[in-house]
Structure formats: C-alpha cells, structure tokens
Amino acid sequence: MSIAGDRVEQVRDVDVLMRLGRVSLLAGFVLGVAMAGLAEPPKKGPKASAEQTQDAARFSDYLTGRAAQIDHDWATAGPAIRRAWESAKDDQGLRHDALLLSISGGDFAGALQIARTVPADSNDAPLASFVQTLEEIGAGHYAPAQAKLTAEPARGLDRYLNPILIAWCEVGRGRKAEALAALNGLDQVPGIEAMRQLQTAMVLDALGDKAQATVTYDKIIDATPPLHAIILAAQFYQRQGDTQKARNAIEKIEADGTSASLRGEMLARLSDKGRAGPAPDPKSGIADALFSISASLVAEKQNDVAPLLYTRFALYLRPDFPSAQLLLSEIDQRWGRLNDAADVLLSVNERSELRSTAERLAMGVLDKAKEDDKALKVGQAAVKAHPADMDVLLSYADLLREKNKFPEAIAAYDTALAKIPPTSNRKGLALYHRGIAYHLSKQWPKAETDLLAAMQLRPDDPGLLNYLAFSWADQGVNLDRARTMLERAIQLVPDDGAIVDSLGWCMYRAGDYSEAIKQLERAVSLDGNDATINDHLGDAYWRAGRQIEARSQWEKAARLSDDKTLTEQIRTKLKDGLDNVENPPRRASVN
Image (cartoon, rainbow, N blue to C red; front, side, top):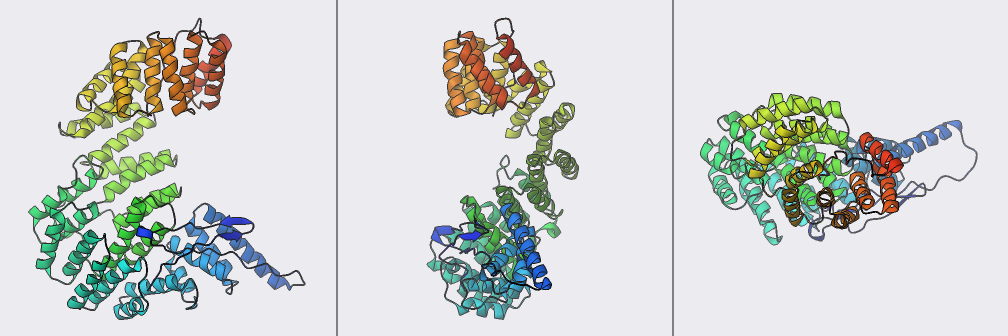
C-alpha cells in the first residue's frame, strides 16, 4: 500500500492561494498533500429558499474552515470543511481537504467517514486506504489489515513502513517466523539499521522470546542508542527484573543534559517493576514506527504537515504515548499553536516517566503564550509533584525571576542549590541565575558573590561573562577585567550583538569613545532592533562630539523601546543632551 504520491498542487480558494504545505519526506520520499478548492459556484438563477439556506450554511462552514486553517487550528478546520463537503460530496477538492484536515486535527472518526467514500482511482485513494488499514489494526483485525498492506506495491516511504506494519500484523496473528521474515524486507532499505534492530527487539519481546530480545537490546545499548531506544531497552530490562542492566541503560542519558528529568524519573522507579512500561503489542509497535518517522522529519526541521500526520497516526493507535505527545506539542509550537501545545503536554499521563518533563516544557510554552498565571500555577504544581527534579525547580525559579518575583525566585534557587551536587553543571547555572535575581532586586554585593562563584564553575559561559562584565562596566569598576572577559565572550560567540554592545559600553565607561563607537556600530549592525544598543551608540556619539548623530540614534532607540524607564531617560537626553547628565544605570544587554 502506498500513502506516498509525487505531486503537490497549489490551490485557489476564494482568490487566495492556499496549501496545507509542501510535504518532503526522508531521502526524497514524498507524502502527497494535493490541495483542491471548492467547485465553481453555480450559475445565477432562481433558487428555492431551502437551497439558498443550504448554500449559505456550506459557504459559512467553508469560510470558518479556511480561517481556522490559516491559523493552523486543525481541530476547528477539519469539522468545518467536512460539513461543507457533506453538502457537496461530488467536490473532490473539498473531500481531499476535509480528509487531510480531519487527520491533522486528530479526528479519526471524521477521517474514516471521508476515507470510505474515496474512489479507488482517486489521487486520495492511497491515503484513504491507509487510514482504513489503521482502523483495522486498531480493532485487532490483523489479517484484513495485512491483506490491504500487501495488495499494492510498496513505493517511496512504504518500502520502510510496510515491512514493519506487516511484521506487527503477523505478531497479532501469533506467527513468529512470518513476523521476523517480514522484517527482512528492511534489509533492502539503506540507512535504517538502528530502527530495524529496535523493531526486531520489540517484535521478539511481543512474541515472548525474551532471550533473543535481550540479546538484541544488549546490542542496541552497547552501541550509541538514541534516547527513545534507551527508554524501550530500560523498560524491557526492568520488566525482566534485571535492574542493573536497566540502570546501565538509563545512565547512558547525560546527567546534566536536556533529558536529566527523564533520567531521574526512570532511576527513581527502578525498584518498582509495576511502573515499567508495558510490553509492546501490534498497536504500540506500529505506533512506535510511525512516531519514529515523524521524529525524523521534525529533526530535519521540516515545517510542513507530514510530521503532524504521522504523529496523529501514532496517537490514533496509542493515545497514551508520551513521546508522541511531546512531539505533537513541538509541532504545535512550530505552527504557533502555543495553547494547544501546552494542553498536549499537560495531558501526558501523571504516571509516565515523561510527566515531569512535560510539565517543565508546559511552563515555558505558557510563558511564551503570555499566560503568566497559568505558567506559574503549572510550575508551582510541578515543583510540588516532583521535588527531586532539579530541572523543574530551576525552570520554576527562572520563571519567577522573569516575572520579577525576585524573593520567591531567590528562595527557589536557594532550595535547588541546597540539593544540587557540587560537581553538577547545574550549580553554576543556579548561582548565575540567582545572581541576576539579586542584582535586579538591588542586592549587588550578593549578586556579585554569586556571579563570581558561578564563574569558577562556568568560566566559558558567554552569557555569564557578559552579564558580570557589563554590570561592572555600568558601575565604572573593574573595567580592565571586564574588557578581558568580554573579549573572551566575543571569541566564543563572535556575532552576538548584545555582547559586542557590552564591550562597546565598557570602552565608553573607560572614556575611550572612538573605540566604543566602533564596537557599538557593529553591535547595531548585528542587532539593530535592540533599543538599549541604539541608545548606547547615541551616548557614545554625543561624548565624541557627534550630537546630530546622537539625537538620531536616540530617536530610533525611543521608537524601539518598550521599557518605560529607558524611554523616559531617552526623552530627557533628547531634550537636554548629555553634557549635564550623569550616566544612569543600564540593564545588561545580555542574550
């Protein structure tokens, strides 16, 4: 069976070119997403009132669906376009759009309703057939599903996907030899050896061959496995009661890396076999393969609908699939659907080892969505639910600091620093961020102590170098050391406008206006929309006797500024200049 096509059509919808997106898949594979518009409107003539009402309702649904599609609100777009299609079932374009949008919004009941009406000779037939095959698998009807898979020649991506789906159908039918033979079809597809090995291990586990599954998982873990393979292997070992092997697998996850929360959760539940993930079955095995396709597409930064479709396919077969839920949230964020992304994260099962990770990510997503109260509430609950998770606690402390809740932030950093091991990279980060909180709450001596301590642990952190050096320069102290630190930071990140600005400001505070102007002009060229950087350049121009250029730069800074204090300072300078004005304290222009 093929769900792959070769063309992507542009669509004209009410004089607007609309597409769900170009869908390029791995190694040149293409999942066709051919969009088509509404049929030509009927010629003018007398109509019955009922027909007029029907047309008006259809057009209203159509416009609602298209508006939702523009906003990537698939859950609204799918049902609306499907209703429009139901009033005009001969419209192939509407049928196509309704099918794609229903899948994108996770409405499989609606997608199936449409798929059953697609003729065998339609361009949509491969996708419609695939949706119906997934329905058979979801219902445990493995023989009919397998018959559909083998009925058509495998093309494109199906060369990878079909052998896996057929193997799991054989597992569902209890046929071990046939299942393993089906996986041999992957031998003809280059570049997927790791996935083939993982799928083989899962199939052996599902069939009850724990000995061979152990051998295969051992090979996976002895190599350089991806995170998802580590999770599956550790869960397998835990189910077998081999706690040491499970621990060894989990400890391959970096203790100070981005998956430290997951590492901690998995280690904490090692002694409880009941909390290991369930053994795979056909539905979860196929869901895993679909998830892997989507994850690969997301890793390739493909901003199209393909990753969304495959993630939805995976979640149809396995709704409680935390890894796929996290991936769906990432996809939603790429489409700008921040509240949807947060909702997906917060729907992750509370018993999952990825729950704390999901809550931590939800904090950040809600913050981006400017849902401050919700973000803080989620953070507070996450810290209470996962008291040993330092990433959750530090993320919550950072959120409190960013919301100017400095006493609460400092208290959270204090709690974290009392628990973080002295060798952990997180200690330096916590000191750095607590130092910022002290500084912004006008407790500079404590801030300086923390920042200097953080420097001992993170000597090549460009943000830290910048923050401390700028703070010194702004006070007119330790200028030589500050300049050396900033030059080092620029070596680490040469094109960071904020750090180049800090070096220019350090030179300005030392009275070296000509060199300051060179650096500040470069900073403006790198980050021309930063109000503070433009304001700094205006100050340097004024001190160098270039008053006209100074006023022009201040005017630009005033237009860019969203900081009331900075804007007021700029207005004063535009009125009076700098000749009788002391340099006011500035914020560190830190990235």
